Length: 225
Figure (cartoon, rainbow, N blue to C red):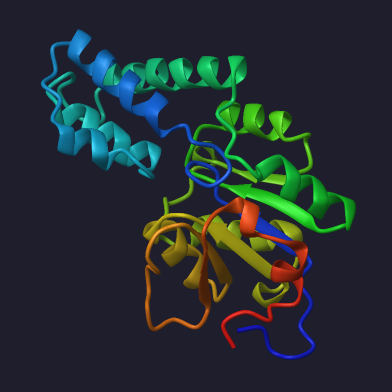
């Protein structure tokens, strides 16, 4: 994975499912708000909003019948209500994943730049960043107008903001869509949990959870070689 001589200078973090377990908050609000507007919400639609971009979530809202189309102003309004529900819940009691405060604080202490790369709205991301001690130098969010993961744009933007090369960064992800976005930028990826998304890919390794991630794993990649 890491060629000899490469040195990691930054860690690019996915947020939902990696640093914070906010999906149950999104699921509950999505179902409740859409049904309040007369939509008929299926379990498949609830599952499909996980990791979806804002634009894709608006498509799913419209598909429930709660609004007429993804471009209906009512859809934007409904998404804003859902996002506000999640933002309020996160602000009150952030569902931070065990191990996240320890590893992000440790990386800040040794001088690594850290960026959150997510499709969630900025105000939610800012709440999570604050709950983790404001150790992140940049935030790439769903409000930035970028194509969502698995498109390369979110991670490409993070690399550009840091003025670094992909070989100087490591991404931490839980989902296949996020890992695909990172790998499309030639970023090495640490996948948190689950079965390896891309079994033949030496640029991706799997750990059980954030508590398994150490600075050594991120900086001197002795794993998987």
